[in-house]
Image (cartoon, rainbow, N blue to C red; front, side, top):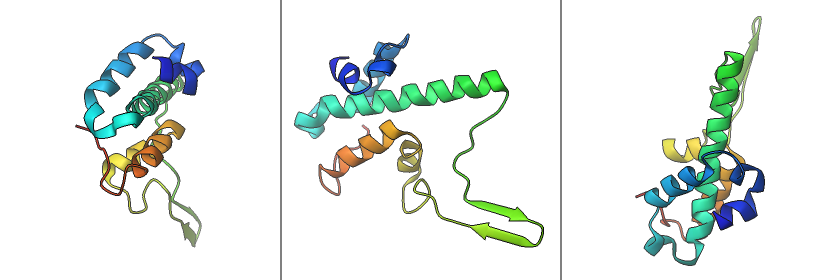
Length: 120
């Protein structure tokens, strides 16, 4: 919890935050992440907490977050544009790219090499 508290103090204070840290720890290999393990756990736990917050917010509003807008249309005119979350990312990575903590996790993973640590 120490790294989560350092990087995401508001999220660390939420009910159930320690359970998300436990879940993140169960998904990552400390042997593969080495010295970056605590940071990876904190970013992944924060990502999951942010997803939970969004789901709760959506449920309260009776809406659903489907992802970034990549196209729009008005009459006969239409416009399409790329999205970080959909360009050249695996499905799992695209899901991680939906939150600031998930993107921090992806950045940290990229520092471990092109075939760096992944979920286990």
